[in-house]
Length: 207
Figure 1 (tube, rainbow, N blue to C red):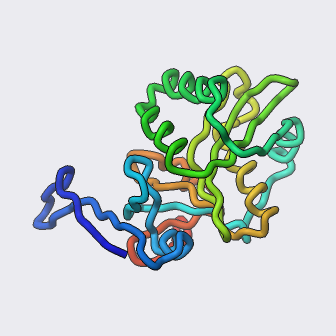
Figure 2: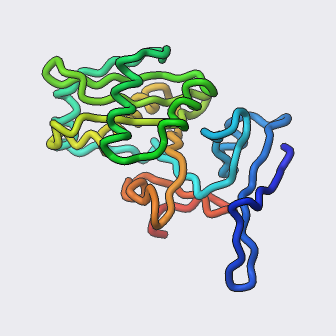
């Protein structure tokens, strides 16, 4: 791989220099990069970056009976994603409602990756979507959106369980769910089977 460093957002703290680390894949497979903590960028095409990556180990995937009862009420459709106004608008309305400034990243994902779309219905109403990109031995979570009208469905969490179930049925061991830090996306660390890249190795949460 060809590694590069970006200092535009770098900073100095307690005698140490911090900067962003990127790479361009050469002979490595996507699986090899993922296993070394690299994630495919949603900002630049064919660029990978180092981060506090998180993945769900599906060897340790379990669903409680209570959660299973909720999932059994949902109708799921898995299909290849093609640009669709209704789907894209559902995501964008969700992002605007949540005040998430990530519509550009959503659009980039549509251009950069071959995407599998998961459509979630409840009582014949579309209540959520998720998007992933598939690899030989793992899947990579990209985006999710859901209706706030059905809070008891806990879709913000249960969409990850749906994706985990789908990935496990493909006999894949990992679902990569991008990064987590103390001040952003730290909800990902609440999953019991999450593993976190610390820059040297994968660690089990709370170890």
